[in-house]
Image 1 (cartoon, rainbow, N blue to C red):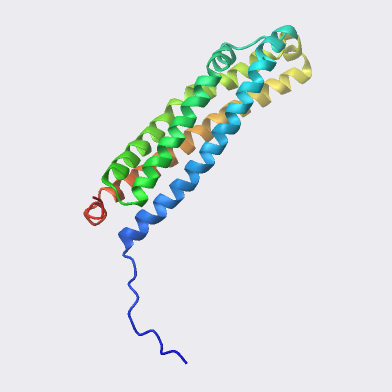
Image 2: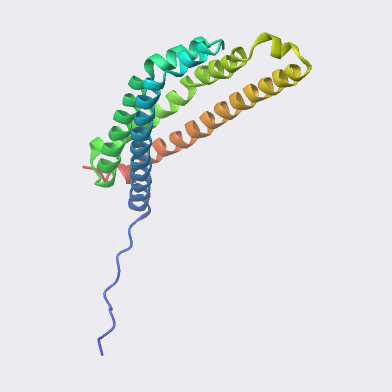
Length: 191
């Protein structure tokens, strides 16, 4: 028979739990983002060989300008997202290890992501408007085409409201995290 463990267990304080939980969740999101970016890169390489824009032009479909831009920059955008995901992984690891560079880098990523969410709103709108130009004019002038135009308009505004709403929610969450990371009881844990 073994004697009961009478030594008091040391419970981590709230600041340590907050840091550890935030860092672990961020590490998980960074790993998922890295995997997503690698899959995206593979799709870009395959789509680069398939030439979707050329196929659309060959079919006589109008290709919106935003599609040309996305096609030309798809590889660079995928690579940029991969590098940013690796950077998020690094600062999340620093946050988990209670390094000051991890905390300040994590705060920088929170600000960057919040700003990027708002910066993407015009691109989302351009893509939604571009979808309307793909449909031939004679189709849009038909009875079914009028219904399709209404559906496209509702989809555009729904997507814009969703994008703006999610950007606001993410900015509020990131702001809350930044405030928590600058509290004295959290800052004293970093070296």
